[in-house]
Amino acid sequence: MTAPLNPLNRIRPDVRAMHAYTVQSADGLLKMDAMENPFGLPPHLQAALGQRLGALELNRYPGPRNDDLRAALAQYVGLPEGCALILGNGSDELISLVTLACALPPGADGQRPVVLAPVPGFVMYAMSAQLQGLDFVGVPLTPDFALDEAAMLAAIAQHRPAITYIAYPNNPTATLWDAAVVQRTVDAVAAVGGIAVMDEAYQPFASRTWLDAMRAEPARNSHVLLMRTLSKFGLAGVRLGYLIGPAALVGEIDKVRPPYNVSVLNCEAALFALEHADVFAAQAAELRVQRTRLIAALRAMPGVEHVWDSEANMVLVRVPDAARAFAGMRERKVLVKNVSTMHPLLARCLRLTVGSDSENARMLDALQASI
Ligand SMILES: *Cc1c(COP(=O)(O)O)cnc(C)c1O
Image 1 (tube, rainbow, N blue to C red):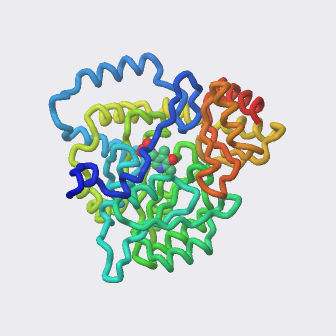
Image 2: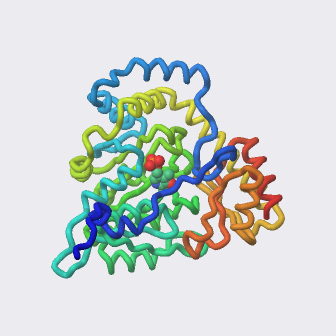
Image 3: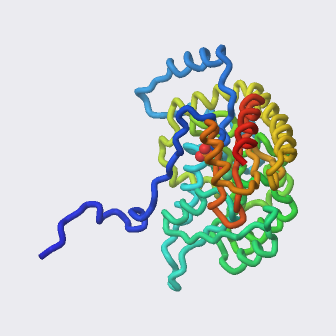
């Protein structure tokens, strides 16, 4: 007897064994779990954006308007000389494209290309590697979430990774690693002929950017790609990321990009946002003020064991019982992220998004009552 034919058997076993990425339901909850900007567009800008979007030719594929956006972003960041910039449907897509471009088949020794990143870190680096047939090597941070320089250098020398990710600042720890240590890590990547990817998703809230290093020492950073996104800038719903790097390298990544990956709606909304960059800059400035207050309040809260410094719009806290605190906060209609089981170094940790003054007050009350 032959086995019954089942098209599901054509799906990769590793994919069938996976769980779909679940976005936790936030119905009726104060959403403090995903580093979203709490401030919407002011009403007069909503109206103006509506007009712009309504007038678009939705019957046409995206065209030269994407070049306008690339030019506007290049100007916004001050694109370093010799660098190019491409767009992605969020940074998530760019991570996927960089991985795809490096997805060589296993070598004669059976060795697959390696993606390396510090852990705990952003989950998409490992996920993208796994899905595209690359091996992922996670290098633990120190217990205070600094880059473990010796461990990084040793792992890079041993595994000779194709791609090394540095989230600058890191998620979920919110740390901006020491620039000298990062530079020596980037140098070690160059020494094995790898590509370093600086992920600056949280740049609006950080005190430093790696673009300065790329400008100051272009040769030393000629293997560095830098990605940013408008998500934490205030446009998570728009899905717009961008990748910057030496033109030759970026040109190769561009070849694996789906030609119409950024819709005319995303594109126009992003152009509109850049025309009003001052509004978003003021929102980011307000969130940096709120972050300082939130950290101070958390450090003064009885029962909170530790609060880490933050260079992002999130704060990592250690509590006596993360599951209990998470559940208690949820009962009080505040949704945060329980990261305590993501990695041993994150034991008993919750990740809190920095919100507006009133949101943070509600979050603090809920935490206090749940700890
Ligand atoms: C949120 C986040 C991203 C994802 O950005 P999108 O543009 O929304 O896909 C990338 N990297 C890090 C470290 C993040 O935290």
